[in-house]
Image (cartoon, rainbow, N blue to C red; front, top):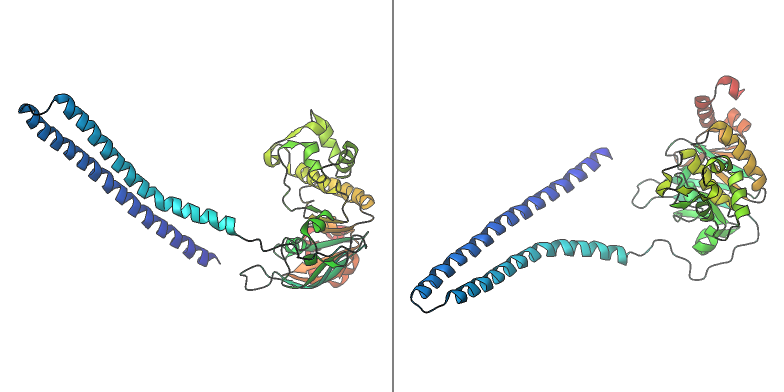
Length: 366
């Protein structure tokens, strides 16, 4: 869509340029005209006022007062002209603000929400197809799989294959176009969004931290978490080492956006924030990418003991992150083109073999 975007961008810029030139030409014309009128008015007042003073029919004080009143009127007229210039801008701004205020959310809670069934941490995709608004082709097509409690399901695939889009359907960031996504046996569209998301610990692809202490950032996952729970979550996420090395420990301040910590530290704190919730479903959207291989392995080993009663979905680019999963889903162009363990896929799936061979040596594969 490169050429289309260039044409659209050039059209918008041309329109803005032409409008700006018209406005500035108008302003450049109005101001000299107004000043010309004002100064000629001053000349006329002084000329006729001087004649009346010369004839003895007017005092100098009366002329000065008249000039002051005339100037006030003239300046008021100039301000009125400035207001007329500002009105179209204010109107356009008000229109945009009203568009935002009048916008109705695409996703809303059902009028009669259903309760969630008792089965713990189970996710089902049933012939799911999803198309972004305005898109010609679907981003996901015919996606079907089940992630059960106590299992780790990993998703791997090339850039743009739809991995993150698939995960976004579980907490209902978008609604499916066809098929259904079920959590604990209930369609996510039949649940209140608050109830659904309370069951999920989501770690996004881009780790986001907030201004405040490390403890406050971890407690964003659970407001009433005790200090023991915060420390346990940080230890599981392999964040305890660098936290204790900081001067203030868990009371160390995090800058806005986490600018004073590294990418790997951000990811570990985001993972700790999800772990402290103790949810039934864990979703990790490529949230191990900034970790070194040793920390990655330690974290995955620690997660296994923490998630024995929860369903775990991991999206990753690195084969080493997913190879120990109970099941690996291979995605390509919005479809699942393979499903199985690392060994099964290595034997029977060409796409997975290509990914593995691009990352591991023959000795490592063997």
